Amino acid sequence: MLGEELAGSSRVVALVASTLADARVEDAPQILHSYYTRQRDGALRLNFEIEDRSSLRIEAIPSTTGTLLAASDALAHHLDARAHAFSTSNTLAMEAWGRGDFERAVEIDPDFGSAWLSRVRMLAQSGNSEEALRAADSALARKTLRTDWSRGELRVLAASIRKDFSARAAALSDLANLAPADPITLASAAEAQGLARNFSASADLYRKLGVLEPSDPAALNPLGYAEGLAGNLEAARKAFEKYGKLPGSKANSHDSMGEVYFMNGRFREAEQEFFQAIALDPNFLGGSAMVKAAYAHWLAGDLPGADAMLQKFTASLAKSNLSLAVWRQATWLYATGRSDRALAMLSKAPPDERIRRQLSAWQNIGRLSSSAPSSLDTLRAIYSSTPPALDGLPRVLYASALLEAGKESEARAILKRWPLPENSREPEFDSIVFPKYLELRKTLRLAIEPAN
Image (tube, rainbow, N blue to C red; front, side):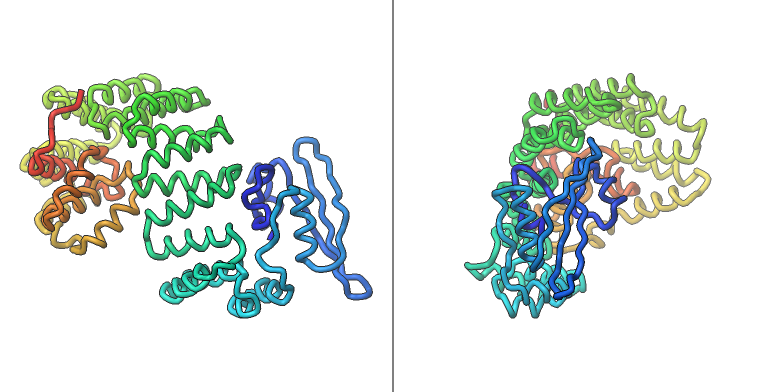
């Protein structure tokens, strides 16, 4: 109740914690303690104290006798004079909601936004998506529904159930406008806009988050990616430079800038950034920066030089894990257009689970398109639900299906951004991405030469 009344406050953000230990993990500067007693006349007496974690002082707030609604309202206005009322003033509706009888709560007060939200969430979690959406639509159709915050959360929940990522991003952005001082809502909205491929909107939200939390890597690093994916490479560089000044972040800042350059087809600059990350930490992320540098070198026009880089990396890897080194060398050959050599290499290698899965993936590559979801809507949903930095495989499958359906302009639009190497959720298919991506770009007459 208190969280809803304080939603949108510029002074305080309420976080719910089940235990005192959980509250301390949240690292909040203040912790609210509350308890109640029942008086002899049956009235409820509510007591609140606020613990300041820096001074270790306890502020006792005058206790309240009466209803929980009145107590919550008094406390919310003590914390912020501009707090708004809870989404019902009906005690019976509030009590039904508190017992979990959400259907009864909205029967008593049809404009009780929190009860509608709880009902929709309960139905969705039980797997009854259709009834959940009917309930959400009924609630949102009420012009007198309380409050704007509850309405916004209902829009987010309904869009999530429908898997409408654009609508979800828009609803979260509207919530962020209602709560400009709430870093959690801002971060959620920024991430949602990125998932919806609205990169400029995502960057705007991350910039606002950075004003609230200027030293938080959760704001700075994603801001660099959002700026870069929006094509603002100079703004991305500045964000990563700032991020790199945080303790332990220097190598990752260069790796991140390298990925942004790579996705924009700026392969020579990408390679330079990857090597700066390697110079700072040769073992950064298990050597993945060297693999990405090799891909960048290849796409910049020098396959023999890239082969030498990859060979040096796998020779070092073989000292500790021969099977992994063989797999990496073979997948590199496949990704760079030498599938026969790749298959021969793995066929001769001592079999293990990774090699068996990889051989199976390659041997069934002809059936990949037929085994993938055939519906454009399904492929679009898979692509849309995958973070942009990880979407290489779903993007090429979706683009291929768009092309087959005669939607050339849509396919062209999503193929302008280059996929990152070996960065999907299905490692055995990583090596398939670049041959397919290059084939699609050639079909669509998109430039394959690096944009340097």
